[in-house]
Length: 169
Image (cartoon, rainbow, N blue to C red; front, top):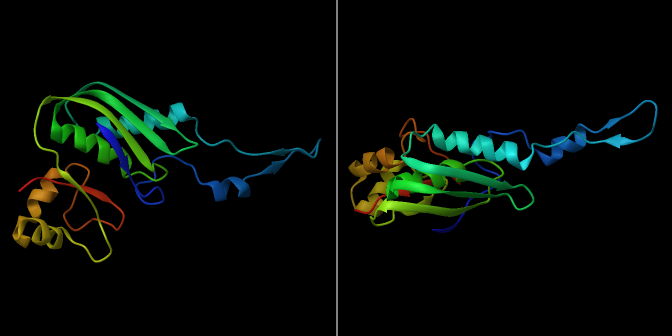
């Protein structure tokens, strides 16, 4: 349990929220000179999208709940995970989304295990380069890839700012 920070401007764009575009979408009513801004998604609708994203990972988490605070760009997750890996995958599944800067983790774990290291990808990184630094062998990159499936679909598709789980050696 704890709080995890993410790069809020980097990640998968799963909901339509872009403050610059909101200004461009301002409309004027013809019968009154009143400015009407198009509304951004509600916190509840964003939380539902984040919940669905976790559910798509096919993780073993019961009583899963997600809350979202748009003013702080913070997601809060709770539930009961079977494994530490399920908990960590849920955290990175919603943390690697644009406009999520923090994830507050309140997930309980049934099977205690050591926590993985969370690693933020830097420009020029590859899974084999990360594996070389962590495990001493670039050929161990598949350990990192497997630890981040199904969020990662290809070992060559990572991007700067993305947060990955790095299992203990």
